[in-house]
Structures are given as C-alpha cells and as structure tokens.
Length: 330
Ligand code: ATP
Ligand code: MG
Image 1 (cartoon, rainbow, N blue to C red):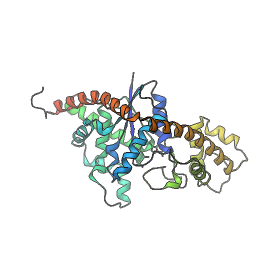
Image 2 (tube, rainbow, N blue to C red):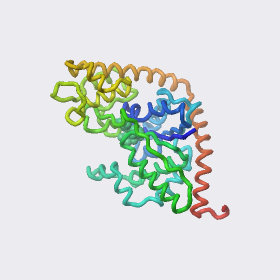
Image 3 (cartoon, rainbow, N blue to C red):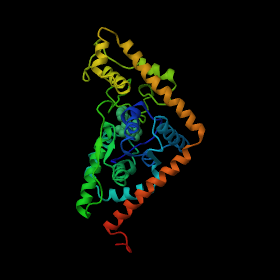
Image 4 (spheres, rainbow, N blue to C red):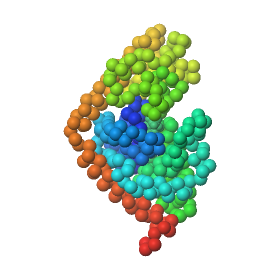
C-alpha cells in the first residue's frame, strides 16, 4: 500500500480552506493509502502563540480531524512534538539546505516584502523542518493545498541532494494537489487565500463558527457588478470562489451550477452555497462535540505517537549513521 503524509498547523481555528484543500482529502485517501496525519505544533510557534490558546487550538484540531472523518483505526494521527525525531532531522535538513533556497520561498518573501517586523529564525527555516516531517516517513504522496506545493518541491530537492551525497536514504515524495478546492479564497477579499493567520475573520469561515455567522459571512461575500453567474476567475474572482466552494462540497461541476443559475441573481447562489456549507459544518460540529466530551483524544495521540515513532526512529538512526555523526555504529 502506498503511503501518504500531511499535516495542518493550528495557529488558530481550522478553516473551510483547510477542510476543502486538505482535511477532506485525507479522509478520502485513508481507505486506499497508509495515511499519516499530524498536528504541526512545532510549526505553530514560528509566530508567538498564547500558550493557553495554543493548547486549545491543538486539541480542537485533533478533535476536528476525527470529526471530519479521519479514523484512528485507519490513519496514524499524532502530535508533531511527541515524535522528537522531527526536530532532530529538521536540524540535519537545515544543514543540507542553502540560504538561497530559503530566500526563494514565497511565504517568507511575501512577509519580507510587507516589511513585517519580528520575523523569527524558526519561520525562516521552517521549510527544513517540513522536509524532515515528510522524509522521516518515506511517503509516496503529500496531499497539500496549492500554497504548500513549493515546500514539497523544496523537500524533493533536499531529498535528492541527500541521496546523491550519502547514497539512497529517502523516498522522493510527490505533492498531490486536488483539482477542485486547491485554493479557497477569502470571502471578503477574493484575491487573497482564506487564511486563519491573516486576522480577517469576516472573510474566513471557521469549522467551529456559529452557523448563523457562517451564513452571514457567505451572504455578504464580495462579488462584482457583472451580474452573470459564469466561470470567469479573472474578472469575477468572488463568484468563482463561491462556485469552487459549492463544487468542492457538493460534487456538482462548476459548469452545471452555472447552467442552473442562468438568469438568476448572486443572492440565490450565495444562499445555496450557505446551505451546503452549513449542512456540512453542522455534521462536523456535532461529531466534534461528542469527541471533545468523550475524552478519547489523549489515547488516540498516544497510540499515534507510538506508531509514528517506530518509523521515525529507524529513519533518523539511518540518517545519523550515513552522515557520520555516530561513533559506535557502522
Ligand atoms: P496559515 O495561514 O497559518 O499558514 P493555513 O490555513 O494556510 O494557515 P496550513 O497549516 O499552512 O494552514 O495549511 C494546512 C493545509 O491546508 C495545507 O495543505 C494548505 O495547503 C491547506 N490550505 C490552507 N488554506 C487553504 C485554502 N484557503 N484553500 C485550500 N487549501 C488550503
Ligand atoms: Mg499556510
């Protein structure tokens, strides 16, 4: 069975973008692949997090993974920092990554371009830790949203470089970006990605949002003055985003939705999208509440960390032998 690995970093509450672009796909894949999914808590702290809030976000993320359909019997679910090999291999990966490569990462470049202050070294080197996260487990595929593709490509470069330098060690993984829903945009600023860390709550639907608030956010989504429901991402990015959300959740193609909406107004489309999103969130939220009150999370994380550690331990030992930092082992 081929293996897949992915993660989400809960720097805040998980969003509809995370669900459509990532989480929902993990659930689909878990029947056909050996699935490793972790909560990337080390990546969260590249930007300061209030400890109490962070703890809550991490727990919520695990509960949401399961509420969205990840099955701990089928998938290995764990917390990144419970498997300490991630940080150690992350350091080794940083020693095999060039500054030029990190300087080219768009996420970092964007922050520099905006003259953001207080950027940490951890944020700069996070692609190295991400390479370690992936390469520890030799996955065949890494399912990600569009924004993370560049990081998986860097991971491939680092793996190939390491394999050439020290002999075959890592499987070179492929990023897997789904066709529909790879980049859900902000509802009130459809030229920017829906993102939990941008502080734009109006444009962002959180999986645990009150459903009335969700409906309101969707009904007030920014559109355009064209007045026709058609597929035109360049001139009607807001409408395109609504069609994308609809299609990703309902399975109906964007073309078919547009055909049904010939001669109809934006308000009707928004109402239908709101119904679909709220229907999906209602199911997720009710399962989330059961999971939180069941107290099952600790045991799931403990089992997951044991299973993940078994693989990560062997891989790190192999890497350390190859690079020559061990003394008594050949
Ligand atoms: P941040 O803004 O802090 O980076 P994020 O919501 O992008 O948060 P990540 O942990 O970086 O969260 O991403 C988790 C996964 O969700 C990744 O696979 C990413 O590509 C996907 N993802 C995030 N936002 C979206 C979006 N708006 N549309 C589709 N996929 C997304
Ligand atoms: Mg992100």
